[in-house]
Image (cartoon, rainbow, N blue to C red; front, side):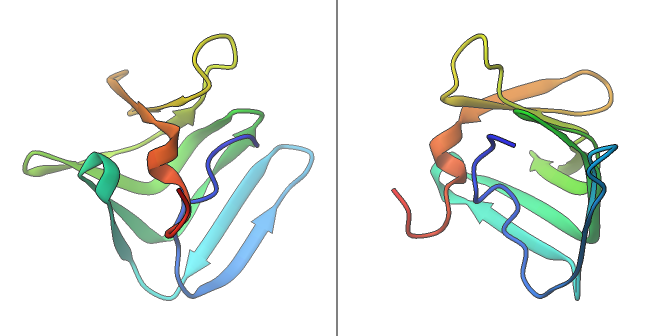
Length: 113
């Protein structure tokens, strides 16, 4: 998948599934989780069910993931690393086409540098 390992810091996962043919993946956890990525000062909410399609360098048609921007929660629909440009940046986009890029190192596992 070539995305940072700490991108989905889910706790108490009770179900995980992956369809190799379509790339569809789903994860279910016991309760909704909010996680603060300290390196970029962003809070992200993970619903009890997170699903989407995985490809090389990308997760698309994502559901169950939101990022807090100012005072509102914005749904994230796409997460990708452009292999033709800077692999050190990861981009998050929503359904309206708005996107933001951050250093990929901000999404390492807790305790990793």
